[in-house]
Length: 300
Length: 323
Image (cartoon, rainbow over all chains, first blue to last red; front, side, top):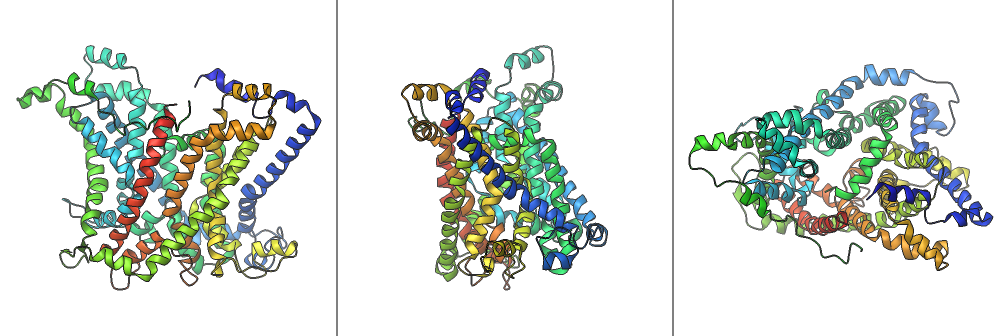
């Protein structure tokens, strides 16, 4: 789609410029937008603001009057206890580790595979491409049990990855969606550049490292955002393979905490777990929203 | 012009160019290396290893295991269709399927019209559009586990529960929410809708900017009202993406796990046990040791259902993205 077309679309929508000048339509539109804004604010922001408030409220106040705003002052101790006594700092660091490792594995697999399948294109590339694409049609639920048994006893190596981050990192790399996304991006890069580099005597490695990778920043950015969000959100798989609380990420640890700790501290723990994703979203809003729009077009 | 009129394209078009472009495989390994055969292979090693061990092998295994009795102690033995028979005869199987369908239906009732209405309204916003999108998308950013656990607290059935306190302000008595057999599932769907609607809104917003303004101009020449423009232009233009989000939502809800697992653990009285929860119980919450055969048999049945849906989905997106 051309750029001018998008700009035109922003100049006008369903309601025409002429319609906007009619007072009745203008008033109705303004009113419905105001209602929408209130609804979005209450439903989108409301629960999070409440969580932020409850994280700093003494347990008894939250239990008795959940909607009152700090009836008996602020309780900073909740956050301190959650962080240092409950040792949420450990799970916080684990979450970062899980996300970082999953990201690295996914980037390595997606870029090397995309490069080989799109640019180097050996004879058997078509077969491999079909094999990768085929896994898109296999829902992750099928993999749950056999993948668990695989991680319990990795073929050929014969070791168990349970309670190691590798159990989350390595399977994360087997994302056909990533490979497809990167391959499609490489398919659209100008071929002349590669031919020229080849003629100048660049090896496959040189071509990859000095030309293809620097050109693929946009797609690496998209894959990175998806990878980090997915790692932060994931629950079922890490809960199966990371059983020891000392290696668990936040999402796996939180459900176990609900029975065992004081409510105020527990709500503080929930708040701590959401603060990084929310901050990342507020800073990189554009990238998130573009990624979400893209997700509709190609997600598999 | 539109998506559906076009014939779906082939999933993976053959590339005759690639076949003829490459030279015939040299008999000599040294020439093979010199022509880059080895470095080609080296670049494929990460993918071959990761996909081989963590994707292709488990996929094959899931077929094999569904016909086997596996208990991790003795060697697996083939038992024919026993696992499938066992699952189909399990009284919980029907309950789980019914609950999953009920969840999907409720999710469509709650979650399908709301994002569409919100997106159409939002596309007409002239100022601070970003604020609207950000507010709508905020719940999607909250880690799903946090969202469920937070809502679980909101659903506290006592009169001082968060939602019950809000209801009390408008004069409605306390509700049992997730503790009631009838209200549990709708409560789960309500949270799932809250958590997911923002993503769908953003997808619709992106699609709405793609509707050619000339279509509206032309309709206005014919004197079409705003409602008629929505009905005759906006919705038909969105039908491709509407179908896609519909299929995506069905695929997603058929695999619903987090909500029933964390909110109710399948209760009360199995009223929220879903197919995926049943698979989980077979494999990982079995006091007699994991029944991996039954679990893979059920996953396979679910997967076949989902694979049909995703083939439809894939063909639609393919022809849709070519437009």
